Length: 508
Image (cartoon, rainbow, N blue to C red; front, side, top):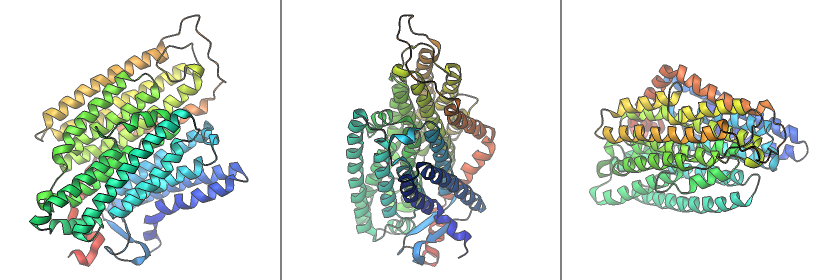
């Protein structure tokens, strides 16, 4: 094994080293700790881009930890899907980290930087792991870090929302363990590649239990993705936490969707007998409801952060409309939209943060206020972010929705998918137009209290603008991104390649 082969573990090692180093450095010299944290984000982006380049040869690479071969040892797997998710997480992390430092949000508590990197450790581990138990472990790592980040800056609203968030996720973890217990009891393994082989070989007497385990797993992933009716924790949690942290959380719901895309075609695909495509009958109705509830929430929300949280919910529903068709073409469309929706959701929260900081006592509530510093620039950023969020041209949301409409047209559910996407897009446009006109175009009555806040600097608008620019690049590179998504979907729908890459001779 060459030194380059060990690069696969870098996205896990970097944050696990940077987090304690930043913590130790900040106790004596705060700026050194911040520099270490920032350098860690840059290093992670370099490693993710390098791995993405390596994955372009279409090979699937297994990295056995401690040289213990699968299925007996822990294995990390690099393929196109994991590489794509690593790049997405690294880009988002760097943008959010810069914004947190520029706006001094990271100074509202001592442990922002270590928690931030532990969160990245959980995310990267979840994208790379090749077995379900370690997926559970990395889920717990990212959730524990997210508890800390969510409470960063303190406040009674965050504490109340945090309690609900913790309880919901404890229930989710318990269900995950039950599902793992069932699968291990039936097959004797939790390695995903080995599970795919053994589930396919189960007798008819075990089909009921394996279907139950599959549905439990889907329920856990749906809870992480905040799919209706398991969504109630998300709007309150995301609206209550610091907008910078919520911007990073934009990828958290996508982890649940990633887990569905990773496990269902591999373990519960065509070869799984009676358990084949076990979530299919449930996922489409849930996706429809999630999109409707999300964009209806955008229309009903009374503050920008609340609106951004519901927009993330709506985008998850739109994404799952494509996923629920379980074809190679619709999965490719969903991957393109996943990347777009993550960046667009983060952009909404960073714009909300900048607006909140400049409107003083008016905050981000959707009510007219006296003019505030940077109102025109923020209005333009808000318009661009909302255009992206609802999927209007010229930004990549339009390309993503068009891709979904095109690929789902060949499926039996196309009428439902098209009606949901077109209807929720219209509702989203109305919701964002109403709030935008109130926040940026209307002026409060002459006798309204003047805004009481310190002058804000222009650099705090840089990262929201950078995210909009990234969405513009995704639009300009739509052809390349589409080809990448199609190649990734082709790998996902060739599970035998994954099994042979992980198990080697055992699979043959």
